Image 1 (cartoon, rainbow, N blue to C red):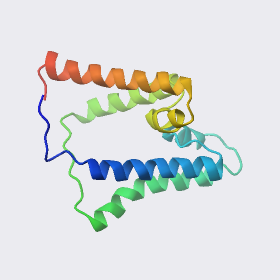
Image 2: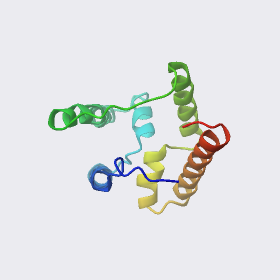
Image 3: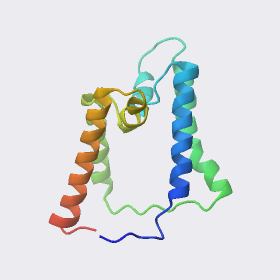
Image 4: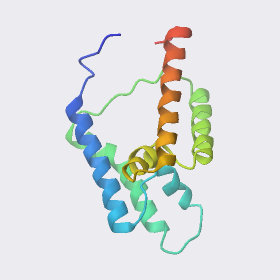
Length: 145
């Protein structure tokens, strides 16, 4: 295995982690809410008074952040080697997984682990193991990139 030093960006990864962690901490400390994206999005489907505005604001921030970043820096150009159909199926499977797993990677990995939740530790370990296995199969058994 070789490391692509041009893609190795620990400073920006650290900065991003600090922003995500700070936002999650502020939401739980000031609002008493967990910053799990699937839970925030799912909460929009329920009609609970006073619950919709902060959820819309949080999601608006998620969508606005890349646009704001593009104003001050070179926009990132992702390369996705998959068809729209495969992306749609993958997205639906992730959605089903978040329902069965009682949360998503942000809810369990960032917020749950910081609260020392055993359920989140197990869920995060399962996410990571599935990711490792997928990369191994895709790269080494199927001969992909």
